[in-house]
Length: 434
Ligand SMILES: [Mn+2]
Image 1 (spheres, rainbow, N blue to C red):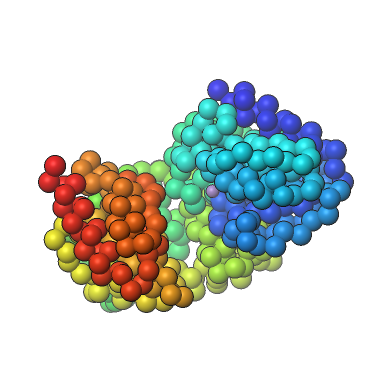
Image 2: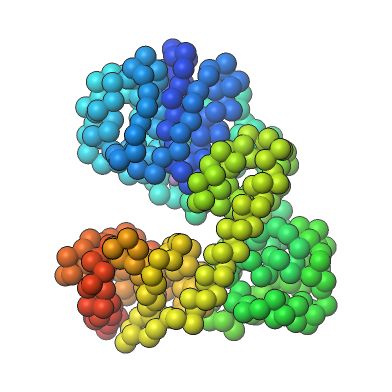
């Protein structure tokens, strides 16, 4: 099943071994950071020096390299044939995004991408997972399955196909353990309940958390990861009831109840928590701290945790504040923000855990453009395709839009936001009444 992928990964490993210095450009999110750590750890073991830079957009960011080096793109590159064509050096792209266009590389070019090997890179193999396949050809690197898992979780992929193979290798060799229980962030119960965004529990003040815990006779100072089975079940039931009362989408439950991955030898054992911490580091441009954590450098643990705490507190505060600003259309709900720090996490938390019965459209007006995140769920997507709605409504007001049926986006001129929202509402109504 992975023959084609392994063959291309082998070519990449061979090209790496022919070079003395490797120049890595990786995407700045958790998948890109963990992908770069998987490759870096295996390069260190193979005795190959390297330099890593984190990049938002390879087409506009400055890429420094010299032509006798090997240039590697990670978790990006497949969609930038013009960048690949313009580089005068040997190149490897290790990516899982859908490949667009055709590159005309000037030197040797190896392209490792699940889409080119019969796998669907959007949910069957992440950027970090693709890097793991290359690492496997460079040497005995099964312990890196744990780091590859961080990108799989961060990119919201499924444990299937290529990803499942990586988890299987980690489980078999004892690096990963599957545990029963709540798959949420780690910490004291009072902090977990207050700070959680997956799922978002809708507490408006800490006193509500205390009351919630009192009702089920659990102390807020116990660590979630240290709860006994009976207490964890009690907590899971109480959370489920709260979510139901909040009108959460039913698909939310399977995501956090049931099983979690435990990383035996990492600095943070809870895989979801470690993924969240590395994600926060990427979001606030502290990539090297996230990278150091993936490289098991304990001296960065405290700083990484602080970065996560600050980031998570801000996101939760933003969700809490914005919740009251959500407005009702005919067929949608919408939220118009100005200069909000993020859009996607707010849109996801609100639409999944509080407003799951209609599409939610979140607009963020910043630097004279309006960025739109539209969210719904599989139940709504049976009738309404948000990707089509975003594309059609954006085109009508001189913008662009697209994406997936349950998670789409658009960019529109700020002065036409009102008109755009009206059009989105009209289109959703039209879709829903077919
Ligand atoms: Mn990715």
